[in-house]
Length: 488
Image (cartoon, rainbow, N blue to C red):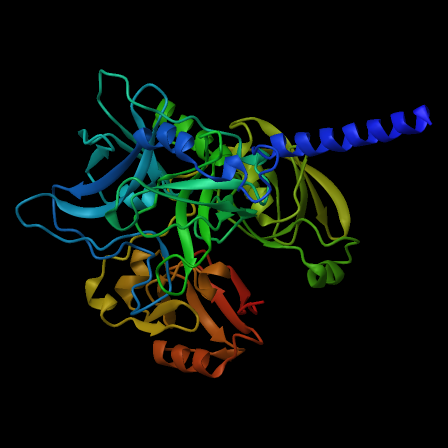
């Protein structure tokens, strides 16, 4: 009988211990089942640490009026919009505002991190801290290929600063805070979770976005996305929206990509990347079958740039690249990342399949040209008024003129339809179409004018998919499919 009582007592104590342990772990006292867990009642401690280092940024131009839109931005009436830009009013008696957004201070040297699209058109920047202090700087360093930038402040006193965290450690479902100046409302804090990782919207040449449902709106650009330790795990950059405002999908550049770029910009003023100099296409199931490959992986070389490392190494059009510098290459984005990170001026092995047989070559990676992967600005205002919007595809097109062809590097006698501007979250942008691209056919029907292109897109179905044949200045042709995903 005593033994039975002892067992019952132990079970009772065990249950009580479990109950108390669970209550303490959930941050609430025993008996407070209906009280919200302590850690969910307030973020005030984190906010107090983070807010002092978050700044508002006004990008200014002393040399001229603000430009209404920059190269590559879609200038179509109505939604959708993506990058977190605000209207740019012009005051004739002061420097023109060419951008507005957010940023944050990191390190001890007065380094402000923000987005390139916030400061791209500026020759000076006004930075305002939460405590009212203002600094003006002309030391602006940018990396358009990741949409990141830094502004160097000339300060003697220590400033509040944030530390970069490890974005790789974040998991879907982890809570985060977004801080910035949406709609110019400085010091705004919103909260949510990590909704997805490793997103690529093909808006920048190099991308690694964290997706979050923390409310991000125009003006949040460049502000920090922080974890519950107050460390920066993302730089707020874009929204995917049909209205131009928050709809539950915000994108932040991962901190692991961000801190690498920030360090390079601070130390050298530029970001140096490797360059192979080839045009490629991903090897999908259809192409793998056509080439007789066992697996749908790697990239096929579609063209070679003259005097570039790929051509010098002996690569040929049609080769399938499987490995570079002992690192496997599964698709074009991976090849791009591998090449950018390889040491410059040193030979590395490139494993390929040529005519169905494996082959290995040596390639010496060179520094990527500054203009590689960027689109030349379209500075032809008379043509901008002639641009024909194609809302369904998320682009605007113009008839090719000799002046436009020359500006973008096409032969003078080039004719047809050219993409003039792109909506950064439209179907065309998602498919990889960029401003300056020639459209040869829509839905397998040749188009020779902007009106023909508009009519062809109008007849086609985005649900079934619109096949668009395109060509760039280097002559390479390819077909991309514009297909609208079904909302679940």
